[in-house]
Length: 365
Image (cartoon, rainbow, N blue to C red; front, side, top):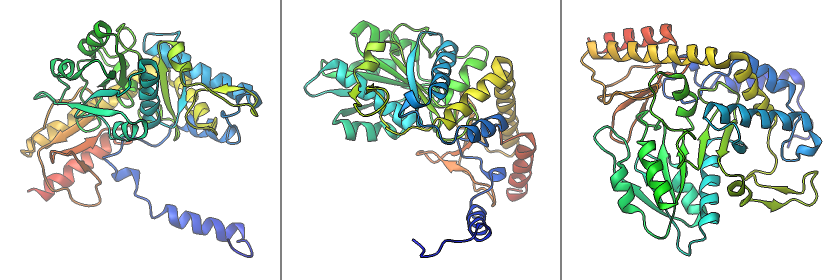
């Protein structure tokens, strides 16, 4: 540390210079996060000092977390869902697998996941000493339900499906997988960290939620398409006993037991997440999602006029294309199979899409 502190002017000159080194969202086409909604920012600022790790000290903020669970549970067809606000999909997925392992009580437990699963499942299996069995994808980059069933044995404690894959924006056959899980009495976790705030607002979206009896838990991230501040994930669970299997004693806190992974937990981003849900409502989110899907269609149509073909038609707003060089300053990403990947988040608006298409056209003329 410095012997003598900086002045406020010096400090913020330094900090803002560092922020200036960050990439501009106006050119970021690869992120599943976006610029937070103005009401999320305002709410976050109002709750900066709150700590949901000791909820008895912040009963008002704790009630907002309960409201968040209720709102998202209702959105996903289970108003009585239990759960809590996590730091995001990684924590939610770790906790889901931890629950499944606890409940199953297997000596050498394994989990069955698709090849398209987020890398957080590798972390979870490493931490929890779980054997990870990956299942191949079909020609539409979805998990093969029959192949998944063949991977399951008496030591399987959890089956995982993805609703909005990170690379291709696809939804696994969740209804079929839920049926398998129910028939075999296996915990079934749905990673809807991205798709959970998209699919409910689309017409004719594939089933992925608690309306399917075999679904045990769902990960959903308000800090993605929910436009909340970071970090704001949510783990929703059908059975309270499953969640309580994670309980540990917290004797010196205001609440004497807890099932969360993190100790100190920010209330600010929870307030931000609730703020956006309450402000926009179903109608607002339908418009936001419709705009993102419209922009993705325009992007896809424009790319294909240049001979840059889509890799697949996605279920949510993640567009992938045959490999092509992208000119600066645009920031894109690439799938493991080498496809160009663009996520049409709210900040990737119609003007951004047109500017990108113009640059792509000039670059490939």
